[in-house]
Image (cartoon, rainbow, N blue to C red):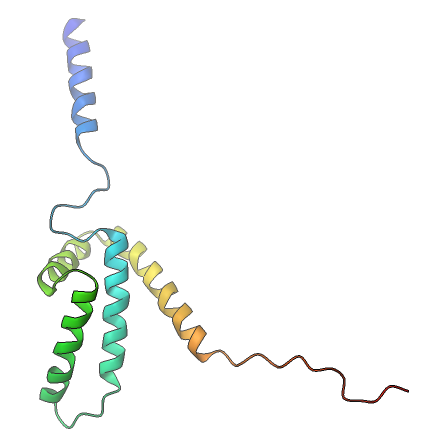
Amino acid sequence: MRKYIILFFSALLFLFACKWGSTPPGILKPDDMVKVMVAVHLVDGSISIINAPNGDSLYKFGAGRYQAMFKSMHTDSAQFRKSLQYYTKHPDQFETMYEQIVKILQAKDDSVNKPPPLPKTKNALPKK
C-alpha cells in the first residue's frame, strides 16, 4: 500500500511540474506571436503595393520595414523564424492563432473600407 501512495504522489508531482500550454524558451508566446504575425502581414501588404522595377528593389524596401517592425515588437527575425517553426509543428495552436489574426486583419480592413456614415439631417421639406 505504501508503494502505491508513493507512486501516486510521485506521478502527481511529475504532472504538476510540467507546465501545460507553456512555450519553450526563445519562442514567442501565442499572444505575442499573433501581434507579430499581424504586423508581418501588414508589412507584406505594404510591400506588395510598391511599384518596383525588379525584385532587388522589393528586397531593398522590404528589409528595412521588417527590421523596423521586429524592433517595434521587441523581437528579431531569428526568434520569429524559430517561433514560426515551433507553431507549424503544433498546428492546433497555430490554427487558433490564425483565427485571431484573420479577425484582427478583417477588423482593420473593415475600418478602412467601410463607407462613411450618412449625415443625420432634418427633413428638408417645409412644415405645413
